[in-house]
Image 1 (tube, rainbow, N blue to C red):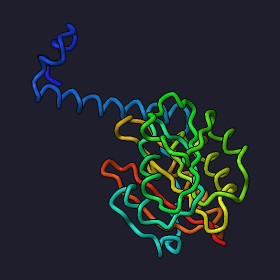
Image 2 (image 1 turned 135 degrees about the horizontal axis):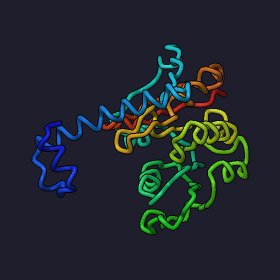
Image 3 (image 1 turned 90 degrees about the vertical axis):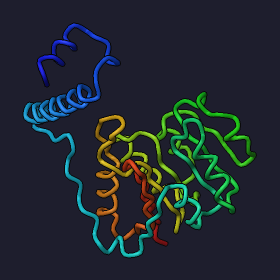
Length: 231
C-alpha cells in the first residue's frame, strides 16, 4: 500500500474519496492480512480452518445430472407429495417449491424466526409452519414419512451434520434430500461452511444407502446437491 493511501486511511478520510486504484490496493492488503490471520490461528490452535473433506466415490456420481440452477433442479426432479424446507427465511424458495412440484400436497417450513416470512410466499393451504431450532423441530416429525427435504439452515459443520442425519431418518425409501450451499467457503460472508465436508462424509459412510442424483450450480459457488435414499 502506498504511503499516500496509508496516510489517508490513518486520518480517517471518507472511503468514498478513495480512488479505484486505492480501493484495489486496500483490498489486496486485506486479503493478505486475512491469509496471515488464518495461518496464525491454525498454528496456534493446531486446527485447520477448512479441514479437507473426503472425495466422493466416482461410482456415486455416475447417474448425477447437472442443472444450471437450484430452481431448475427442483423443477426437474420427480419429487413426491410430502416435503420439508429446513430454513426458509422470507419464503422465496418455498414459493418456488410450491409452484414447481406438481404432486405436492404438504410443505412443512421450519425456521428459527418465522417473523421474516412474507405472506405472499406462503398463502397456500399446503403450507405448515414450525418455529424453533431445526433439529428440535425435525425430531418431532414422523420417521420414514417424507418424500423430500430441502436443507438450508445452519451452514456450520455441526449444525448441518445434525440436520442431515435427522433428515435421513425422516425421508421414506426413494426419498430425496437436497442440500443447499454445498461448499466449503462462503465468498459473500468470507467464512467457512461445513456443508460439503459433512455431506461428503455422510455419503462415504452411507455408501450403500444413498445415491447422488443431481447437482444444481450457482454462479457464486453456493451449489445444491441432491441425494436419494435407496429402497
